[in-house]
Length: 276
Image (cartoon, rainbow, N blue to C red; front, side):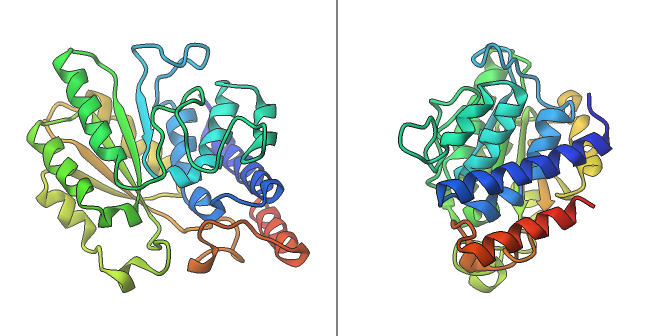
């Protein structure tokens, strides 16, 4: 397993790869991807998720459901690095003849669920977790949500279902970047106090810096053997566009890559600074 320094280096390399994929394609959700980099690096390379890239449908695998399907370039980069498919597939991201569209699709090895329309992932994850318990299967189910998804009523219906069925094999991770599609969440319809809301729905709640890989791994490493009967939510506090200050904290940059020589060069310069 990689140490924290190696994981942080991998996070930087992944950010660079995602940015270049989106620049080349002229599309893709760069800022939504950047906020989740450390979360997914921790899951896949921090010793948390049990998968077999050479056997993507291995029955004993942990299920990772990416409900915020807009971060598809990120998960494609992660799965490629993990060995689910050849790295050169990334060159065709969102391009004619390529293997990937802009939103996440389950035709790609390692992807459990086609997502992009928000609010659907948690319901599926809760159902998969319940089925695992009924079948006495030991795999874990992880579900990554964007905080903008929390405006969907289906999320809270699924949260009630998960707590009622004591799904302690379900780990929900909220990418809490405080930005939805058009504005900051607390301007649109306040989500705080988010921890209290999940607690009231019966969840074990952990709040963590979503860019601190060591804290992320620590917060999730003991959940597999957790004995009490609650689902867990990790509220990962992040920055939308993390690593690229010229794109971050800006609702206008949702769903678009940097364009034009000046904007692209600035984004690359920002990332290069982050590597030092």
